[in-house]
Image (cartoon, rainbow, N blue to C red; front, side, top):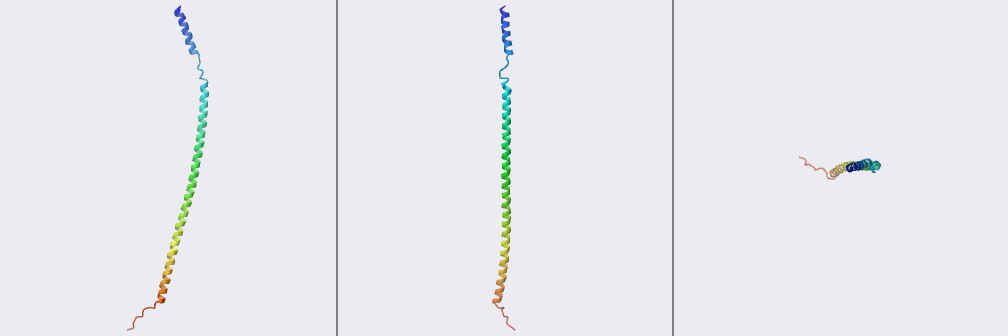
Length: 116
């Protein structure tokens, strides 16, 4: 009889242990759902921030490219102006040289060669 009572008591404990459901099971899906929602919101915010950063970088690059273009145009204009000034100075020097040669020719008479 003692064995029978021990077996019945052991059976009750075993069925009681398997019959209980964990108390954290219903809370786990809610927590997982909340975590997933939070992760989704974080991902969305990160994507939005990244998009804004990329847009700002593109805008800055465009402004820099425009500035570089303006500098290149200004340098090209300066080179053209310098070349024009150089050509004009060369032309003016040539004219001045011609005038000096003419003035020298007018001031000094031609050498007289003795007649034979």
